[in-house]
Length: 445
Ligand code: GLY
Ligand code: MN
Ligand code: MN
Image (cartoon, rainbow, N blue to C red; front, side, top):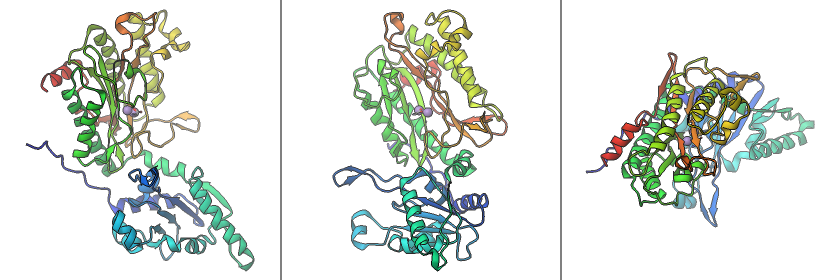
């Protein structure tokens, strides 16, 4: 019998993409414009390319899936405020790489007001941007800057004949990223699905694990589930670290053998409709935690559960992180891995020998999603619609001064959490994290 196929969530509608463009324009002066390029194909080797992944900001405003597109937003323009440039129709190229929507298809399928193919781009851009005083664009995008400079130069050359080139460039990213930080209900439905797929993949890897397999065997289990459920694949390079490999934070070689008596740490999440899941679980290769593993795991789990429970509007990421640092430091002293007073070990940062990353990041179209952590210099309070991870860990070096039973153990537990009006919703509850639950799942493989 084939494995279960989950129902897909409703895709984000054209109405929602339009509402996002209107909201952005409403925040801009009437005589400004937005210029936002999409992503291009990237060479993998010689004449083969990486699978195309749209730029997240561009996707957020358009849902348009082709490479080499460009969005212009022109507040107040009678003939249409949203103008898209896209690849030229080209029967020969389409025979190789598939149908291109072209200008007509872009308007029909994606609801932009007007579209042109790229062959007409330079000529059109001059006319469309003439008289727009401020040009909002991603200032860190060399491509956007090059397009803006080219148009500006062309209009400047015609200034004596009345052309009015843009006078200023301004960053569009901060406005866009503030909007992306708060997820709508349809976005949450897609994120929930990405999380559910990711959770199923982790359960599958737990069930498959046994001594003698390689790390990549578990990676294959995970990524099979991502694709089986219609995800595009991993949202970031899957981390499968057996034994001390778990202490390498971004270990992605996944070539080691899984050994009896070791833990394996898996940090992997599916990408679905461009939204990311991001889950970490750590479990024993042979299905049973040893005593030393149990002691460390219980500490990370207790701190992680307490941190998730504290999530509600008004709390800040810094407060969550400080709670984690305090909890882990207390526990490390209790286990004899640190000594002295808790506050002293926090102040001298000696806990960083075992925990050196932060506890949370935003999650959305990017795994480390956009949105400022501070507002006017102050840590920003959580608000409904924000999505974050909670991922404390402990990584014990295999050094001589560490009790032997603890050496080389790496543990991280990571869930994806939505801030709601009343508190929070955990998106990744579908994969167990309590030791007895993990052992029970692993016993039924
Ligand atoms: N997988 C990257 C992270 O957890 O931040
Ligand atoms: Mn994460
Ligand atoms: Mn992760």
